[in-house]
Length: 198
Image (tube, rainbow, N blue to C red; front, side):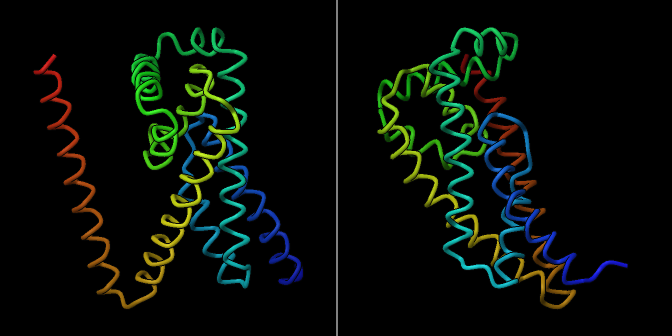
């Protein structure tokens, strides 16, 4: 049997590396449930890790993935476009993002950090659009810090609610499920309505 302190040390090490890698990979367009990174960050926070360190870790992961995606978009645009040519959603999103970047510039880069489905692809398209890297990185940093702080706080609050009594947990779960169902219904309505407009 291994020493529990040794096991905790391994978990902490893998937790930090896992947090960084999961958010970096998500920013490369790989579908990865990054919510787990925020839960792991909260677990490390409970173990005594400084809040500022975890916020910096999450931000560094996002920036690393975004920078790699930017340079892939900048240097390998034809390859990326060929690779995703059959992915209608990506091609549609890329066209929309390029129009947003042309119209709103760095504000679009900043805003994309808050939209889950758009965030992973926005850096590729910023490379396609030949946005200046220092400006891109600064706008990405600003949006990412705010996004990470908000999601880390939301995760902390949610986990603290889950530590209450069983009845409180069920109430929270019912509220979450109801909200998700409402958002799903709203999305279905929006997609149907949008198809009628086209």
